[in-house]
Amino acid sequence: MPARLTLPAATVTLIVGWGDPLHLFGPGESGVAAGDAWYSLVGGLRTSPVLGGYRGSGQAVEVDFTPLGAYMCLGISMHSLANETVHPDELLGKRWTERLTQRLAEAPDWEARWAVLDDVLASLLADGPVPSPVVAEAWSRLSARHGGMTLGELAGVTGRGNRRLQVLFREQIGLPIQSVARILRFQRALTLPYGSHGSLAELAAACGYYDQAHLNRDFKALAGLTPAQLCGLANQTPLDGTAAVEGSRTSVFNR
Image (tube, rainbow, N blue to C red):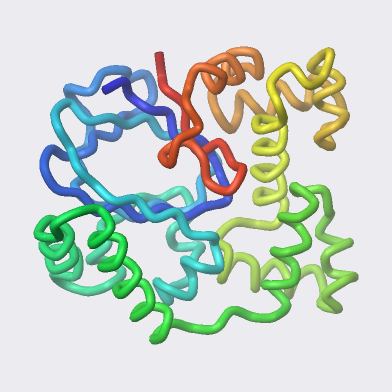
């Protein structure tokens, strides 16, 4: 299977696998014969891409949480997960992953596996914290505008000061508001219909970038590729469940 380049998106990812492990690679690595091996992991919001792949036959379930959904299920400061990959047991307790993996592997079909996941996630939600209404409103407004709101604007509509809002966002979302806005804007540019704008300058304007140079810098910083390179890979990658989450492009094949 070709390696996938996982892109910055406003999601927190839980993977629980069995069979061959998932290999994650560092900068400059391109194959699937090396890299850190993970059977299961939790990955927080990121501001850089991650390359990963299976060198054999791996089976896994993947859950992509909204940041607030992850906060409610995991019950931790989301800032501790930002730009990090950890084993689920570090967050949910010793042998949590082993018990879940056994139930998933023994399930007779995928419908039964989804039922197992529903049961486990419902249990986590029942025991987890309730997010701040202020953060919930700020997140809803920022995501609806694809990152097109400033810290000052969000502070104004939520009735909280800039500093207090940033502290709450760091705790329950994971990254500063400016970083989250940058990711949401990047995803907007990446998921608009391919060729819907006559030029990159028009695409930049439609997505809230200052100019084409600003678009180019953000794509290079967040994905390590130019807009043309990344849009080309996106156009070649099917938008299946491992590549898209509610309109976001979460990964592309690294051909």
